[in-house]
Image (cartoon, rainbow, N blue to C red; front, side, top):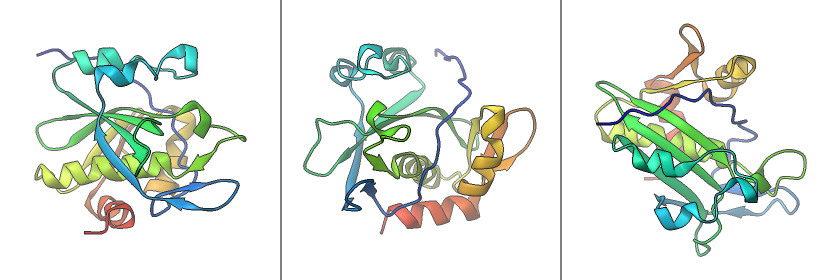
Length: 175
C-alpha cells in the first residue's frame, strides 16, 4: 500500500452555492462528480495551467480521485479532488480548481465548496459521521474556519466535524 505526499491545500472557497455559478451571467449549473481517470490526466497538465500531478494520485492505491463537471458537459473538468479513507475519517489530499476557475477572471464559483461537500458526503457514506481532515496553508486557516466551519487543531491540520459537514452536504446534495 503506497502513501503519497501530503500537500498543504490552498484552495479558496469563493462561494457556497447549490451547484456552480457562472461569474459573469450568474447562471447556475448542476454538477456531477465522477471518478477521475488516466484519460483525464491528458487535459489536466501543467501546460494547461494545472498545478498538481494527478497521475501520482492515481498511482497511490489508497487514494480516490474525482472530477467535477457540469451536467451534460463531461469533457470540461471544473475541479479535481483526491481523498483517502483513514481509520475514522476521510483525509483530503488534494483539491484543485481548474485554472479558468481561479483568480479575478475565473469563469465559475462554487467549485471548491462543491468538492469539499462531496468529500464530507463520502465520509458520511463510510460511517465516519462527516469527519474530514486536511492540511492547510497557514494563510488560509482562518478562511477555512470562516467559510467551511472547519476547526484548526494543531500545526496546519484542519478538521470539518459532523455539524459543518452536514450543512455542506445538504447545500450541494439534495437527497
